Length: 127
Image (cartoon, rainbow, N blue to C red; front, side, top):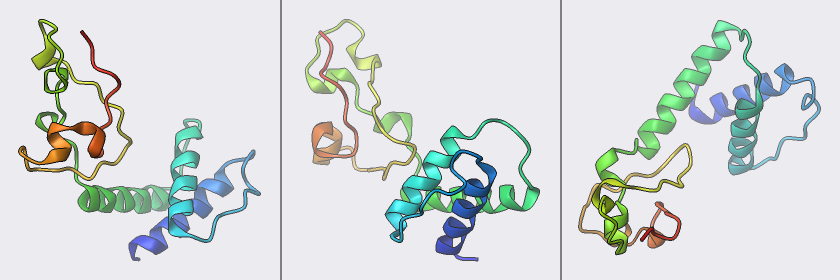
């Protein structure tokens, strides 16, 4: 099963699992289906799920991690990088990222130095 097939399978399984969203119309585009899947997984109440669904979900999420990378703490700029003079500025970071983040490994690149330009989007820095 490829990643697109996993996505379609999971959207259908999580939709069936939800009484409230069982008849939800699914967007035809992959980005829309990813958004729906994420929403359905986030609102699902704890409970049993068939092992085969969990296995596909695990494979799907592992592939998403391989595609996007996993955020490392050293990749998140501190507020000191944003000009804060707070006593602990080099130890404080504000994360406003999503579940997935295309990690940048170059410490000298613009998105690491200026988070507004990249995927990291901290709030206004603290003073």
